[in-house]
Image: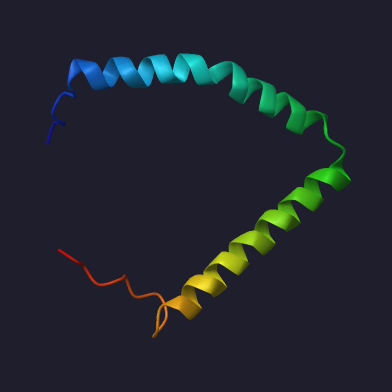
Length: 73
């Protein structure tokens, strides 16, 4: 089944946003590549710890584990 074409406005917005963001993304990638391996591992470990902490907090906040919150209308 073919996808419905997106409106022009959303295509233009995503294209211009990508064009503006590209230099920042490239600069971040170059800085990451220039880091020593020990620093990269430290950042990876830190990200894993943050993710685990987030999962733990969400699990404690929701009784019964990973249930979605009830809808409120």
